[in-house]
Image (cartoon, rainbow, N blue to C red; front, side, top):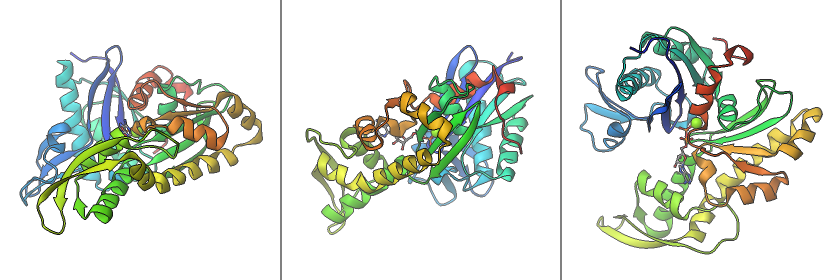
Length: 335
Ligand code: ADP
Ligand code: MG
């Protein structure tokens, strides 16, 4: 049985991860749920649901309920969470019996939504549920000494949002959140290909392009990639070759918005903490931290050291899991 089990949940806009104390990450799936519209029955969750996106009949929807960083559809989010916890306990081969849970709240969620996260987790049988701020979890997962009185700066680049936070003494001193993340970069690529080549590509192709030949605004050796899509004029499939420089160009605007958000947060930093930032630098977490050249580019723009967390995609989950140990020292979010 799962008695006295402690788990951490990263409820991300792109990926949801479950961390179990002692076992590490026991589930890592896309934040997608497929629901029957007539009965509200959950048909699939995670990767199975992601594979259904855009391919479902009219009475079934496969959605990302946390898209854009806000909880667009709370009932869907709660349903997804329940199905995910079921899957997690199956992965573990044990039933999730009265676990203690730390779950991070997406930025911009209201107290009503946080309450609903609590309720959803509790309805899955959790005994104690704590909600912590996502950047705090990211910082803990990245190994930063968050409970010390020094400035820990985290830039968490997720699917829907980028959160920039300064954390000291276990709490957020200063935080900015913008709706620019991996999804926005993918959209820019889709837009570029449509405008330049009259060709329609899907979200997954755009994401692959970003991962393979997407670059931050730095000098680099040019790469090429062949991609397939649908010609908008003839309606037929076609193949074109894309170059990393044009993709880089398409991503530039979003990258500078992200930079602006980092700058603003650093400028608003209390002076006593500013000195720390020069020494400690900035820690990048989230999937966006893996974008080619981002470390080099950001550090040259803000003139402080930039580090990439060891497992950027797993930081928040690891952080929520680790925070189970010193939950009393953290400022948990009140609901
Ligand atoms: P969230 O916390 O919002 O669920 P994640 O931290 O899981 O988001 O990051 C997901 C985002 O990271 C997606 O937009 C994905 O395309 C992007 N991503 C993943 N790997 C890479 C990579 N190697 N290069 C650039 N972006 C990446
Ligand atoms: Mg995240």
